[in-house]
Length: 120
Image (cartoon, rainbow, N blue to C red; front, side, top):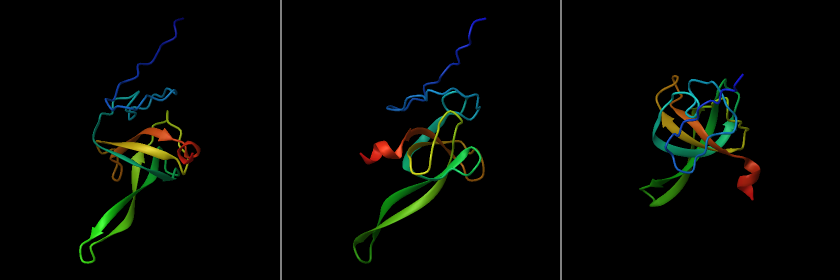
């Protein structure tokens, strides 16, 4: 019997390689048919307790016009996690915008940098 090799899609984002693991998830941008478009975001994973989804935190700077100063702000967002990507809390993730998957999820994880590597 010949072993079937599953096709891996090129999602068209420079610097993002497909994961080693293969999955049969239809909402995976590499092995399924979920198109990615729009913004690319980065953040730190805060929770992996949801089923096939994560919560990640992004930090940004906002201008306070009255005092002509900047303040640090943060927001938590949700992203879909394909089964071929392994993530733990504290890892740095790269997330791409996609079509709405659920009420609060409109993005998908495309790349993970483990926390130990990022700190060095």
